[in-house]
Image (cartoon, rainbow, N blue to C red; front, side, top):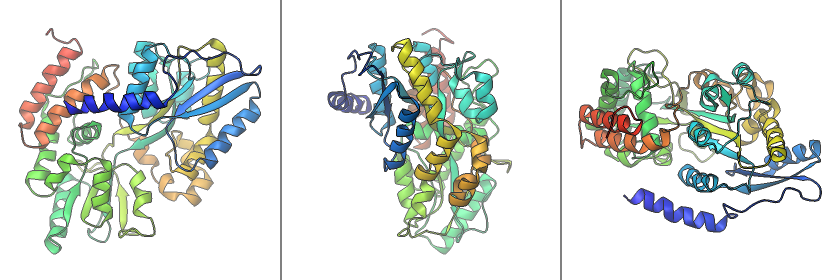
Length: 424
């Protein structure tokens, strides 16, 4: 009950600080097309400002401004939900999470940009997972900007090698804990939020399951899903994972691992740079690999990342300018800059072989296979509605409040009602 209230309160503060969400924007500034880009800060803005300045030099008919969004994905989503539904046209280009595109496209909030980004071209130039997320009903509604994927971090000095199976992960963790009882075996994201969904989907895939059937229906009440959820609960009940993972998000897990107190960690690649900082206790002691599976084949990490879309409420002239900005920001050269300066993983497979990446950020270059195998969460316009249901039931299972069988059965029933599979 507290989460929606907190979001409403935070959203109120955000809306008070940002331009009015229903303000109508002028169509010309000194004879130029006004263009507003809303995005989340990347870090030191110097390199990104130069990228934007380069766009302005190449497009002298455009007057570009940028407006910052909160770093919280939930708050950003609520902002766009409120402003776009209200018909706001005071921004043109927006960043959208990988799971928002079908929702926004179905609502008519983001424009079809297939004219400049045909689906067949995206499929040729970009990774398949991100393309699957931005092409809806055969039309392109966003372009991948940078991607993310769930991976496994491990302590090279504590285990003989990277584990390939769940059994090996547990065995290696136990052996390390026997030598040092103060160690935690495996930390991950078990808090009731979207990160938990990512961990559960990965466990289901790792047990040979799928979360969508051939008809596109979300299927959770399956043998593989029960096995995956039971595995996560078993990590806690067996002591491999500490009870505290049920309240852990990315940063809580990272802090435990980076302090040298854990053998394994599931997280996103950003944690690598943190682990290699000069003052990190585990600097030079960390390996990264694909998530384990039951069979030992490389696991599938959840696809994450951000895309660029065009506000459907703006004029045709501004839509054209917005598409030009997106083309500039998602070019190969922009991908290289984002990787070198901000550690953002490119959505174009070709960029991972760029000599500059291979030489200067070999860690990112080494992620190609993992991002190629990343799997998206269910691509559906109802995903954000379904996510709260999944979080609640998955959380009850990993915390031991409900059995995996009961949690998945209840989740399936609620999902079927929300998606119209059965009547209330």
